Length: 455
Image (cartoon, rainbow, N blue to C red; front, side, top):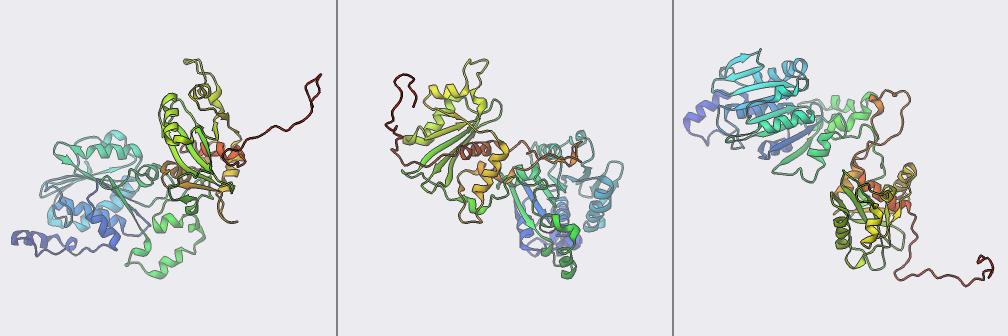
């Protein structure tokens, strides 16, 4: 930290802050996150990558009012630090590191019974662990909340609300190694089109970015058989699907630029309607090569009339589609309306057929169409369909490790993030044969019995 830009009194104060002045982040990625002014910062790091030191320094800078990059409120501040458990997380790691980085003369009192530290300038740093009851996370507003390792969602939400108060718009910081797979953190704060600055910003730092570790020791980790399944998370801070992706064939090659159907394309739509969940609709173009391109999507809570109108608007002059396939539940009569969803759509000019519901066969076929090893894939998703792409990346098998019948596990999907994928499966399993526009199936001139009417 260059202190020459400050007045003499401030310089004298800063010189007492010891190693906080000499701190240099391990890499430019961490430096960028130190400079980030987003509401929520998510630092995903491999083990020993320097992410915990990053969090400690952020807390100390804020507590002393000497953050070199952000215009934070002046002390005294209310700061919260959270970790997995108090004994091995807070007491053994976090508190010793904070007291190591904070100059001793800046600490006024450590109140062990309250799990907090008070600084001479009036700043209070309190410590919480995820094994505490959620009620313990309520209370007064906080200017900064740092969560070391992935927090449960209810604790995150409680901490978030603590950063909102009179004249307070605090910040949240999460540093973690994502060892638990595609959890809520991945769904909500990472792979989410809404999780962008100034609301959320994330980064990855790996163990190889830490210049203070011996290279040969780090390299040995790559060859340890016990580490094989967690290398992406443990070394690089990347999310991995602990329970396994269902559509493993889905890759970047299956994502294409936004697509406008050609005049010669057949337009097919798949519909997965729901009572409580949003309706899911995919629009697919089937070309002469019988490749499918999903070029548009709908995932909304709408009444059936509005849903059909939205489909008409999206299709324009191409409405009605060559084929609309819908979940068979849509043919059941609604108790209140006295008419089925399919009949209501028919009344509004959208005829549908029931979907083929063999889930396993459908998954196999979709994976076959996604596969590009034998050439080009037969199924692509346009980039302007973010919810569909997101579902492909999130759709995993249920985690039966925690189930009672763990010795006889069953292959069953985790029933979330699958509505648009169901609609795609309906389209693919319809086995549509490409026909050019204007094609008409003409009846052959055959003789029938004048008596029976049969051939």
